Length: 443
Ligand code: ADP
Ligand code: MG
Image 1 (cartoon, rainbow, N blue to C red):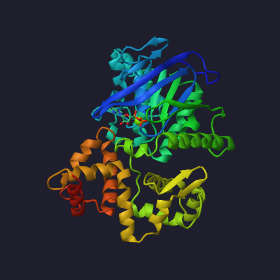
Image 2: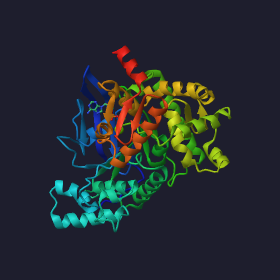
Image 3: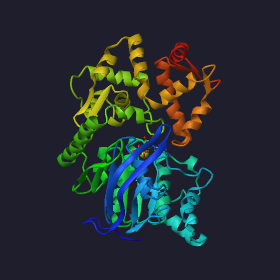
Image 4: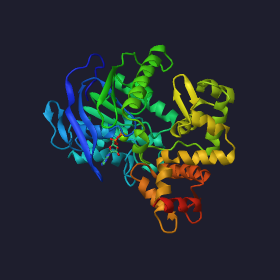
């Protein structure tokens, strides 16, 4: 184990030089990364911050050597990579555990791949399991664990190989707010304690607050194609206080930079780049999000969520999914000053039921899973598809439990918009007849 120093950064462990990456698409090459230079040094936590689709996961995979860059190179300890990076291990958003293996077997897997002898494997796995607070769950199966505990297994599986650089791809975003906050806190404590068996961390996130909370340095990745747009050192002492003035000022600065630039260079690019896999629907019913929109409509200007939660006798965490939903629909924007309805949000909040259904239907283009269900149904002869089809489409990005949640929300939203309905007995989605005509007219 290597003790970490979190003072001044040291030796360059991992570097990217002029890295570009394009994917082959139906209409030619899709450039995703265009010339990324970065260096990760001993003792630092670097956050890669960017919007969905900006190429964060692609960059991380290149750093891990899981995919080759199109041009440029990745170097680990000065040596260009040939294949997977021996100095890194990855934690994924969706945990990526093997359901038929126990916690301990899942953790041992990485060592097995690296040819470690069985006795040593067991020893190291038990130690890593202990480190992440899963002592006693060695023989449990993933399905017996909560999301937070599954992600602990994800951490243990990466840490067990004692990678020089731990790579994390949105490791907290599939967790509920409290669990995520708890795990973040533990991560920082472990890192600060010097017991952490890695020397640097690269954290991919789309959350500015998360980046400011955890990182020593924030690199902002712009979209289409991705380059590093800005770099912010974070010199706040740990543990960091979200409600401190300096914390807020930095969040605001990053926020202003990201929204300003993205608007200039990539107008309306984001909706087209969203997919059901990278845009999880927040657990918000139409009734819930409409209710919040109506409440917000009563307050001109941004509403402080904490104050609103107090007023309603709720906790902020109860409101967050509704706020996320309004944000995704383009009905509200949220920043540190609070939540405010946009013009379409005001219109939605004021509309009668029929009008609100129309308005809501018109925004469904922005909602990837609803859009996928609708267009898939329009492409069938009889306008029906089994739920299993969509479950399979989502299986790559979500756990079974999450898929059920995602489909429940998409069903609620699509039904309200009168795009399709869901027959729970037949487990079948059915296109609304009006949508079928629409498809014919177009196609
Ligand atoms: P982020 O992690 O920031 O959301 P990604 O790196 O996953 O972004 O994706 C960036 C872009 O590259 C997206 O437009 C995505 O659709 C595209 N992309 C990602 N992986 C592939 C792939 N294997 N083949 C084709 N396109 C891809
Ligand atoms: Mg990603």
